[in-house]
Length: 469
Image 1 (spheres, rainbow, N blue to C red):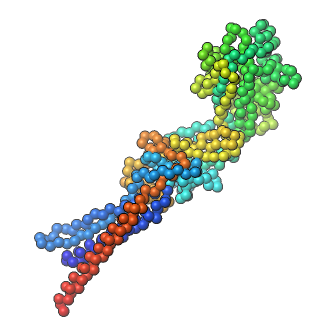
Image 2: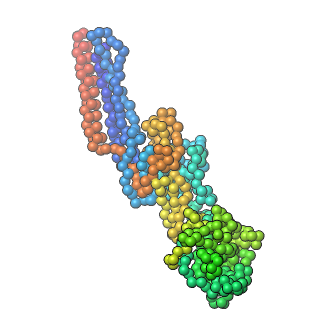
C-alpha cells in the first residue's frame, strides 16, 4: 500500500538524517583534533520495483558515511621540535607496540604528528601510537627499504646510554701560504738531517719546557670518542717545507695528546708524512703521502703498521679504526694567504649530553648534544595508498589497511609522490564549523520533515480504519 510505503520512507528519512547528525557531531567534537579528517554523509535514493500504472510506492533514502582522508589540513606552527606535519600525500607508520613489532603485528597509519618522548625514549603521539622508521645502524648508516619488517619504533634513549666510537673525521680550514719557515725546516733544507727526524727529533716530541722536539707551525686538534664515549684528542701537526724543490708541501704528523692515551709509543706518535697543495691553494692528494690511499685515509688504532698501537689498557676501550679526510669534497683543506684556521667534523656519539631531538623535512631524526655535535639516528617512513579514502578508520585518529585502500607503499618523505615533512608544525582538523552548523540546521529540518511524513501517513491510516465504523 502506498500509505505504508510512505511511512517506511519517512522512517528511512529519520534513520538517514540521524546518521548525518551523528557524523556532524563527530566533526564538531573533533574540530581541534590534530590530523582529523572530516566525515561526510551522502544520501542516495531507494527505488522500489515497478508498480502498476497510476500507482506509486515510495522507496525512501539511505545514507552512507565517508571520511575525506586525502584532504590536506592547514599546517600550524608549534614550539615542539618533535611535532611533525605532512605537506602532501602519505601517513606516518605507527605501531601499538614499542618493541619487537613484526610484519604480523598491526600497523596503523595516521596524520597526527604530535609526537613526544615517553619515559623509555620512544617517540609516541597523543593517541599512544609509536612512530616507526628506518633506524641507523652502529655505523650511523640508514638503509631505507620498502619492507615493512625493516621498520622499528624510533627510540633515542640509547643515544645517551651507549656510545658509538668515532670512525670518521673531516678536517677543513686553511694553512697560511706565506707562513715563515721555521729554523728546523731551514736547517733541514740546508742539509742537516737531524734538524727534523721522524725517529729521533719530531713534532710529536715537542716540549717547550724541556726544549725537546720540533715546534710545529700549526696544530689541528681532532676530538675522537672511543667505544665508551670517552673523549680523546688526536693532534695533526704541520710544518712548512723550506726546500724550494718542495714548494707548497708541509711535513705532517698525527699523534695522541696526551701521549699516554695510546700504547706502543712514548711520544703518542701514530703517523707521519707530507701533505701538499696545488698552485691555486687547493689540496693535492697525488703529492701528499700522509696516507697512501686518500679515498680511505685510515688509521688503524688497534694495529698501526704492525706496531700494535691501541688505546691505553687503562682506558678499557675497544680498538677502533679512524679515517681522517683532509682533501676533496669531504674536507677542503687549503693553502691560502689568510691566517691558518681549522674546523673538524666527526661522527660517533657525542661526548656531551642530549639536548634536543628534531625531525627534518627529509624525515631524518637528528639528536643534538650540548657540545655542538649532532647525529642522525633514524629516518621517518611514510606510507601511501592508491585509494586512501578506502582505509578503515580506528580509534586514535588512525587507519588500517583495507581491501578498498589497496596495499601500502613505504617511501621516504618527498620520494615518488610522498609528501615532505614540516618540522615543528601540526596538521589541523579539516572541519569547518560554519559548514557543520549549517548542516545541523538542514539536518534538523529534514529530520522534522521525515517525522511529519510519518504522522501524516498515520492520520491517513486512521481515516482508512474509520471507514469500517
